Length: 487
Image 1 (cartoon, one colour):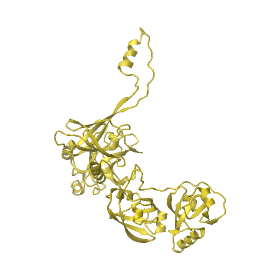
Image 2 (cartoon, one colour; image 1 turned 90 degrees about the vertical axis):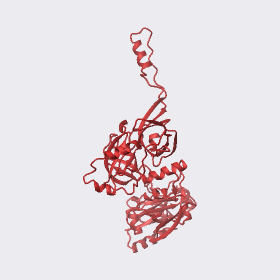
Image 3 (cartoon, one colour; image 1 turned 60 degrees about the horizontal axis):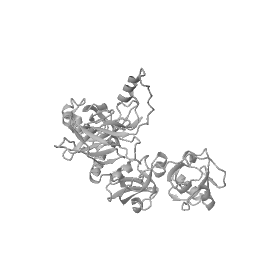
Image 4 (cartoon, helix red, strand yellow; image 1 turned 45 degrees about the vertical axis):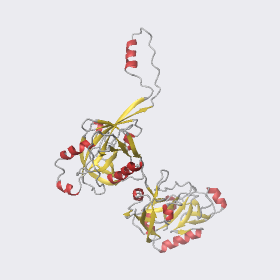
């Protein structure tokens, strides 16, 4: 299983690596002859990070009372009082991780946030045996799992520079230098196994995957290419045992450099915000829109007074490009938007009702409580009732009335037709439609009574499509698109 390491409490770490790029890759017909010169040059910039914190312990059990002069009086006194045989009360715990220097003059060090999370003391141990205490945590980002630390060196430290993670290719060589199991300065070599990995750790997952050995204590270390540039920071591994099985993940350097720049400037990360709830363009939805599967991000709802609202985005739009970058999937959009400069006017390419259009949006700032991406999954079918109404595609529908609004706890502003029953054998049931759902649109046309839905279905059939795209709202106000087969 995928484990996100907690260097303090869990101890599952990540390794560091160097990637072979472009011309470097052509040099090694059977792999690099030796990485010794590279390792020697880079080792001084890679550091071991030692942390300690006080944790609350159990009150402990009462110590046994041994009468004076008892045969085992000396034994009990020695064991419990001198050796601490029964731990109790607060206690200090320590952990080890890795990091790397990005500015030797200023004493700036990058690592994983989880390496230093909760730490009361942070020591930086260098390859030459010297040691510095972290004076300040300049900033941290829990979503990217990164932290920027400050030390005051007496002389400039050896540092390393960021390279482009976008230019690294699957199959390029990489090298890791880190602190596995407390063994400082360990080097391992492998390749980039995959890019843009989503391991479900957050909304901005875009990991590099490598097979270079990564183990406990490697967390927060750099991933280098064969030019000696940092192209990633290792953050997670897949391991059933806690040791390396050749599947490790690193935050790409393009993301890291952007986060670090903001931590230096603001002490926090300021991400871009659009103000839409989006869905994946699944196969059945793509068919109703005339798109390729998983192309673009489908807008399910637009937040009032958001940048998207002011730009005129509408539910049912499919965002194909943002700021000149292709949106290849739903999860791709939040990453692109998050990295866009706040206040920047950005061009977008949309698909609206079958036609491509251009729009411009001014990027806002994402607040912590905002969620730029939502799968908007539907609830399970809650069963059927036996009301009167029109039956269409397995749905028993009725126009909204005050009584039905009260029955299903629907807001007075919701408009459409309400689902009162679902045929359990129908395609609508398999798509998660349930009593109390309100169909707001069908085939991107407004629905106010069941006949409107019937007309939309006929239009879809005449166009040769196999499914009708419904926009559905529930009692919680959540909106989603559902493609229901009509044949």
